[in-house]
Length: 550
Image (cartoon, rainbow, N blue to C red; front, side, top):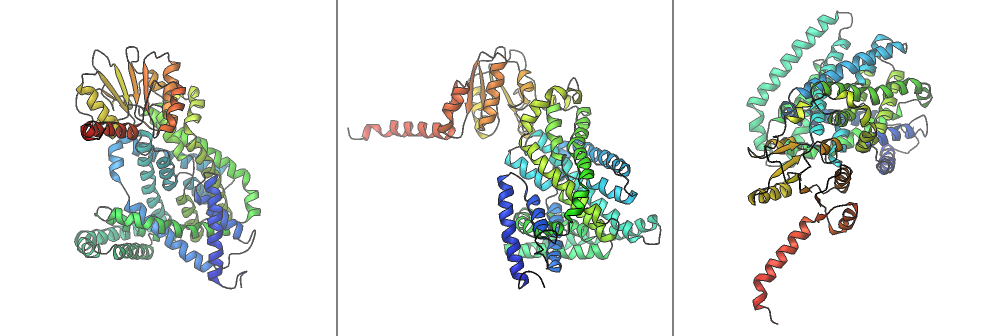
């Protein structure tokens, strides 16, 4: 009998506690994963001892993991890997390889058994797609070059996770037989599984989904049922529930219903994953965690420093600027929810014990907390470290130079940052009036979509070194259509420190920010909505003025 009179009351209290701790974590700008593990520790036997409904929580946790892998498969965007070319594969696979090898050697040096060292090393290689996408979205960096590269190698990591799970289950099923025999058995079962799913996806699912799509609720219900069914089939074949759920997601990824399914399932996935992290935290022994703090700090420092260095080295060799490599590298400075799931899988297979699982969880807590702040404050951190990062950049970073079209003779008289809807409209009008214009944007797609013959460069207004490389000598205006105040302040500061004598125009969200940017050194502040409203009002009054009574 637990502390509470029934399971419903216990669940209600856990949810209230999770909401409260989650709100505190949001104020501290931390991911909710940290909050939920903390709730598990707080409500677990080590502190309050509130958790007694272990079977129910475990069931909900398994549903959460199944939906997590299903949504990952559902949103698998191979287009990002293709558009990023070799950098996503080289960085993703290279980082996984080097991190796992070096992590394995560190674990052996700390006197771990080979199998425990292998699990810890593999756990260190994976970064959290959920956390990184959320942080990049909040900073509006998903469409930047470093954001796209990061998403590319995170997708590669997700694919590697699935392969590792298959391998671990094969290892777990070998028993007294050889590893090779077990691997071959899982291989043919996996091929048969994929063939069956491909046939169903090709001949049955399109017609079935067409009927089910008439009701959004029924479509979502089928998606969950499909994920759980293939998870069970995958587990029965020895491929694991997670792999079955992932394949279920991939089978629907090419259908027109993927976005509707993904959007509706994300909230349910996050709610059910809450119970996985609570269960994980509740199983941790605080006394054991204290004894493992030294080892956890060693592994955490390796993840926080070593992983970004590995990415920077690879990207530098591929011809990217040190700034791009640094910002992309920060996204791998933590371990992910998949690392914890892999640890739990190893625990269930008997490969590792609770002590190793606690170590992996502690490393996760440390690295997720620290890397979140590293990504949030990535630009100040880069400016501080920039003088020591030159070794990670080739003399000519050709990959980024090739993204743009250099201006031909005569030079530009206006440099325009930002080719979004507002910026591209300004560019079109300026060119129509004969202005010699050089455009700059940090979105590779917008750079490549510029009409032939228009000078355009890939670059970031917040990168002082890139701004310094621009042909500023004869430029009369530098115009920024970015509406983030910190971006414009950084651009103004860089231009003035370089001795730029021309005029600067920047863009803001609303009139309240005009005075601050004028004080920072802007000659002209554009307020798109207010400016458009004023012009529209002038035109309206100009047209109706003759009939307005005096």
